[in-house]
Length: 284
Image (cartoon, rainbow, N blue to C red; front, side, top):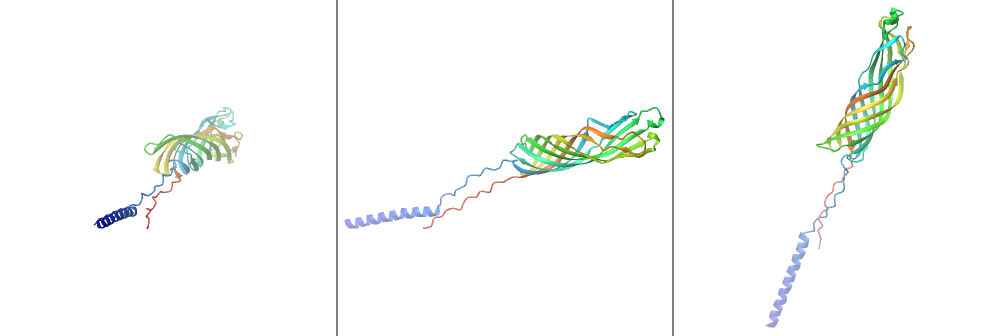
């Protein structure tokens, strides 16, 4: 009797032990450990990286003085004017972070017309009362190294300020003298011409504007720029007929109030996508 009870007890113990072991094995196989997720990699700060830019705009010229030199003592200046211009430029730069960036730009400024009118003041003879007009064209290539401070972003809009320094290669061309009755010449007759002339000056600029985020790496830009290009001088005008001695058209402290629009494309280095690894399944 005791043997029977002992046998049943041992059988029950084996059954219970086997059941627990099977349950543990089944749980081990059907419920693998949670997958390992790699910690996120640091992303490049918005606004950082190399970028390319392109701009177009309009410039309104101004100057401290526009005159003929030497101006004959028998003549006096009546008026002077330089028309506005349009320009287009490209550039490349680097944004160190979301608030500091720098770039180098080069632009072509289309020819604009300059005009200086004078009148005779010599009373010794009536023919010296006639007027005279000098007309010509002025174009420029401007290269600048610029630095900017971005002042924060609100609703995709980022205002900025900046400054630049570089060089302006300025050319004068098609410079003609037209007499209007001076020395008895017919009205509006071409009476002199100057050779084309080019000059390289120090140029500097002050910037202010704002950009708008069209996408994570594409910005539209609208800005104002004050650009100073130094002094400009034409070639010497030589008269075809007897007139005043040869002279040059001189512009002192030529500057421009520029409005420009453009785009900046930023080459952000995006972090690689992260994926969870496949579940680990143990085989027995």
